[in-house]
Image 1 (spheres, rainbow, N blue to C red):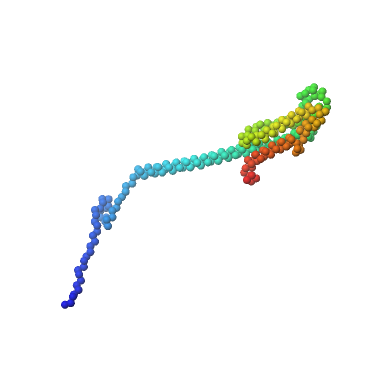
Image 2 (cartoon, helix red, strand yellow):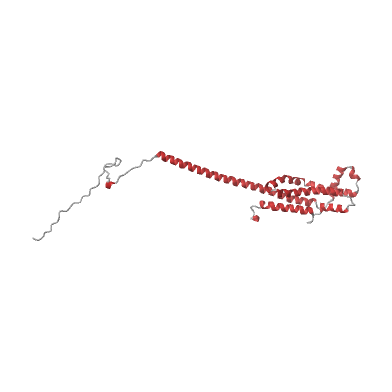
Length: 254
């Protein structure tokens, strides 16, 4: 007989599932296939609370620091603004007074004297000098009356002359000695005019040169006049010193 092929009895392969003892926290009947284990972590709520408290404390500190920084910058800006406002007000007051004083000097030194001013001057001299005035010749009376006219004009602006002393401390505090010195110039010219008026009243007619010089100092207002030049220079210095502050927010000085 020929060789007869007989199929072999099939071999049954069995897979053996790993059976392990389940941990107690896994429910009974839940398969733990392929050796997988399930674990659980317990939460430490005390530690978590302390951590959150720490984060909250840090956040509060940062918020306080930020608020303090903002508040400090706001206060600094406010204080700087108030200082600039005071500087501007001081500059306006000083420069306005300088312009007013220049007008006053021009008014005082105008050579035009009307009869009303002469009569007022004579009344003052007669009331103050009494019999001396009556004994004086006409030329002395004339010079004395002209000098008294100058003094009366100066007296009309008494408040402006006194304001120089009110603003000198502000000028020194906010703008330094240059501004203060410029205000001194106006006071010096005021005193100089008083002295020139008194000197003019006491000059004798024979001293024609002295009389003319004194008259020029009182009334000469052209550009080559020493008093006019001195006052104009003082005003120009104050303008250079103060106008940048006054026009700080104007396009003129940007």
